[in-house]
Image 1 (cartoon, rainbow, N blue to C red):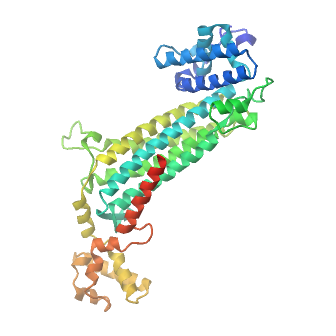
Image 2 (spheres, helix red, strand yellow):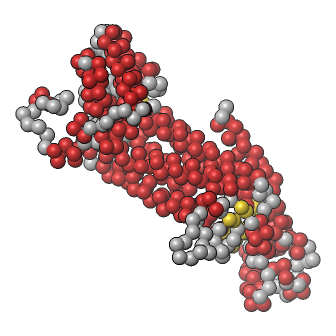
Image 3 (cartoon, rainbow, N blue to C red):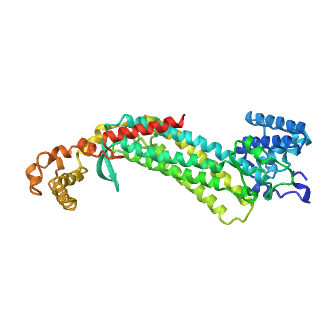
Length: 461
């Protein structure tokens, strides 16, 4: 039979079955992980005397040659060899002869593919951490340039209270910091080695799994062979972490879209991150943040897709588990592009500080400070709240903002008002007054920036 596993079969695989079940069209992305795992495996086989040392050396050199050819684009992956494992093994036998067939001693494709996926997820997790850090750096730099920029803070997308723009940007820094921590923490569960579990029950050969683990820099080996070949928790965890990260990216993207609109005019995105209209020449469309927002759905879909695949599977390996790959490859590509675009887009955006300040000077977002003012004069907060509600209603009816009301008008609502109310209502004072830990006050934001920069410095220590 033409298949490396075909000894038990009397017929060739139906071509439709071959095409439908083959995974080489996408799992060729695991070529270097597959070779890395194979080199470690055969090194261990040679050291344990399971195959002759000279055969192990020959196989290692053959695998390195194949890696070089793949890197140079000199190989063709074939559907008839099904997957990356069989393709590489066939290339190896063609390269060094029958001795290449000894590579698969003491292992199965089941523990082999699981190992490849662990290596891949570990690699891309570290890459995501680095890319998230780049976005954090861009946020910190913009925040440093906007520690005095006052903007409206919103709840329910209604103006609520004035805040510093730096404070708003740093909120996303901390979201991304948690994302980074989630990815970092997940590495300890990704760093379990399944190789040596065999198809599901281990192997009769006296292999040294701890040695293979050491060669591949894993922290531990799976203590249960059934779990080793059927576990995809680490893939789910990556997809879940990616989904939360994309939620944060999407929220920031939404705000950048809103802020850059004609109605807000708080920021302007650099031309290199926008596109125009085919019919309306005046348009400057924020296509990049729109796509970042839109592509969030496909990342969620990849997580739900794999959860659905795994939910009904009996132990141990099942062909369904082949569906773990396309989703994570797509998610990695999506995240990679999103993070690489987001960092420079943040770094190059223009902040329209005057427009932001004008917005907080022409609204009622300083109303809470009047309530706090009355509380300091001895009035219970709930009574103060009711009075301010009446003042805001009066201001709306008179088409006046709070700083435009006369002291006589204020006194009609409460005799506690004095001339000092006007200083209290200035946007800068409103911001500075919020000096509690984590608040938007200038000193607190500077402390936040200092803490954020310390986090970034630790990343590179």
